Length: 103
Image (cartoon, rainbow, N blue to C red; front, side):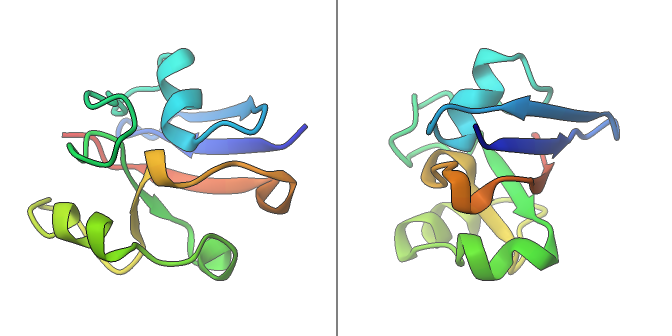
């Protein structure tokens, strides 16, 4: 079962197991600080903004045009920014580390 590590806005490190869910779902189900998932995962609110640690960018890819359109309005967005609802945690991403940006 793949796992992901979230680094919260208060620098708490939380590692969770996942069952082929997206990063937003896993975080919301486990009360991870800074991930709200207000839109329910349909890529329309950016309340699941995370930044991918540099060593994982090649495996996760960069933001789609739709994601980038939402992220351009976020204060702390950069080239590593993604919406957690758009990243499905599969075995390929086992060990992924993300920074939660929060609002």
